[in-house]
Image 1 (cartoon, helix red, strand yellow):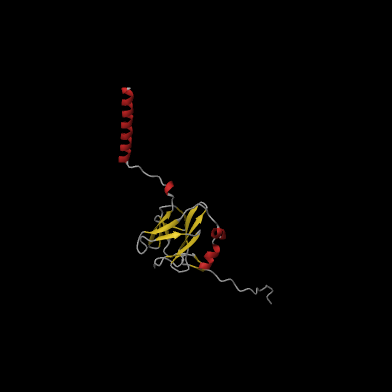
Image 2: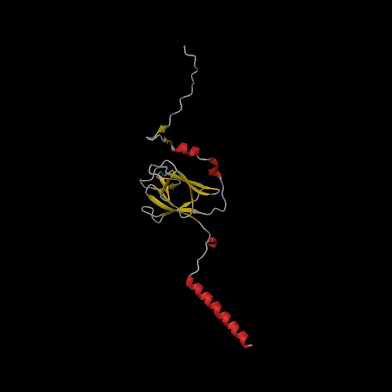
Length: 178
């Protein structure tokens, strides 16, 4: 007679492992693992962000990032649907944190690249080039025009300096005549 206790609970399903030992998770597993605080965090003054397509089939298309956390993939369930065979069903996630934006590679087969480097998780900044599979995008953050410095044309600068010198010479000449 075996004296060990037997559990009435069914055995937990075993996770599948890929050829190199990578654990394969379902979309539900990934969603459960995402920090709930990230989903409900309200950020203020962060401005708009967007992905701008720079190659076919998304060339020129603008995808506004309107939520604190957005999933990207080929399936209709994703927040940002990119219908391209090189993009996985659940490919990546872009999240806004208190200190800025970050990108996370999820269940992608072809990887997520940031400025040419394959990433798992990485901060995003304005002007970064992002690849999901073969699709390329530029990450843009909305900047207020008041914050954008304007460059003065060198020719205009010469005219301004010349004008100031002429006015100064006229004032000096008028003072000399008195």
